[in-house]
Structure formats: structure tokens, C-alpha cells
Image (tube, rainbow, N blue to C red; front, top):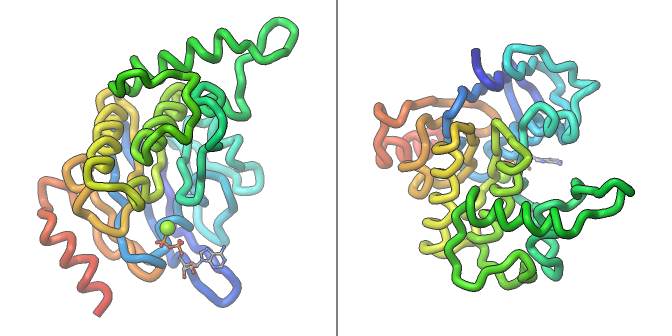
Length: 247
Ligand SMILES: Nc1ncnc2c1ncn2[C@@H]1O[C@H](COP(=O)(O)OP(=O)(O)O)[C@@H](O)[C@H]1O
Ligand SMILES: [Mg+2]
């Protein structure tokens, strides 16, 4: 049984048929590289999976249980163990790291007030144990603006892991990063694999995702056009697949 399974998904934005009969699944402890050119429908697909909006057709299953689209939401996705770091999502710049980790889901004390001590302790655990941040002097009290782009992705991934997500979805996490920073994000994704969780990693290029992915799903103009296990693929063959679908 797949962790998540989407079958025959359709989505329209007015005249745009953004998803056409898309089948997509993710297994336990599997890293899936979801790749394809800009406008292929990658973000739309994972927004449906994340509960941001419903599909216009098709079915969705989480651990074999059918999801009623009307009752599905981002909150429901969280409670089912699905956490997404959206492409356009930013961490609040001026806030300290610990506050960011608990944004909207803060631990409270017996009076229902924010338990600052516990939040700071837990944030420290996320950074050191879960994500193995090594930056000297990096503290939970540092403002997020002191973090590099890769480290910000690490905090977002660490937050998802802390809340015990079984599936962490990352939409183009390396888009604006330097080569060195991309390496950091790939290390964080390896941590997801090590702790037995699953990940969907979205990218419009396969160069960076190749080594960390178990399987690739290639989309083009709203359709899944190919799927490859990593052992049956090379970077060159995947680049060809993305390009050939465009001709
Ligand atoms: N909210 C929206 N309203 C209208 N059109 C949209 C919206 N979101 C996406 N689209 C369109 O759907 C198609 C797929 O977009 P998207 O899923 O963002 O692609 P990708 O993430 O692969 O680059 C594109 O043609 C895009 O313009
Ligand atoms: Mg996108």
C-alpha cells in the first residue's frame, strides 16, 4: 500500500487544463523527484495533495484510505502526516529561529500561554539532533535573517520532521540557492531518508535531485509523461525526457 496515491486527477484554472488525468503515488521511506519544465503542473499537483485546494476530478488515498475532497484541508493533511514547504513560502525574517519553528503551533503551558522555555529547548533539539546544524554559534535565538537560504530550508524541513510528518513535500527548495547551499539542502533531504520518512522533491532541473531520489516522475503540460526508478535512469536520460516532451 502506498503512503499516498492520487488517481486520475484533473484541475482547471478557468480555460487552463492544468492537470490531465494524473496518477501519482509515494511509497514509505521513498524520495520522489517530481520534475518537469516551468508550467508543467508540478506545484498544482502537490497543492492538491497538501490540501490547499481540491481537484476537479480524480481520487486521493492516504495509507489506503479514501480522502473526501470536501473535508480535506492543509490542517487535515498535517494531521495525516503530510507537511509541505511551498515554493512561495517565506519564514518571518525578524523572528528568532525558535519562534519560526513553532509558528502557529506553539507549545503552551498549563495556563494556555506560550511555553518559551520548552519552545527554545525543542527548537534546539530540532537544529542539533534532527537536522544536525553545524554552523558555529548558530543559536535558536538568532533571527531568521541571519540564516542562509539553504539553512532556511533546513529549518522548514526540521519543523516538518519535528511535527512527525511521514511525507515532506518541498517545492523547488533549491531554486534561488548557490551550489554550496544546494548541497546543504540535499544533506537535509538525506536526513529525511535516514529517519525513515518520505519526500517529494520538486525541481525544474534534475541535476541536483538525481542523487537523493529513489524514483523520478516527469511532468509536461499537465500530464505525467514518464516515470523512472533511479537505477534505470541517468541524468542525461532524464534531461532528454524533459526536453523531448517539449518538441
Ligand atoms: N492559481 C492559478 N490560477 C490560474 N492559473 C494557474 C494557477 N496556478 C497555476 N496555474 C497555471 O497552471 C499551469 C501549471 O502551473 P504550475 O502547477 O505552477 O506549474 P509548475 O509548478 O510545474 O511550474 C500553468 O499554466 C499555470 O499558469
Ligand atoms: Mg511550481
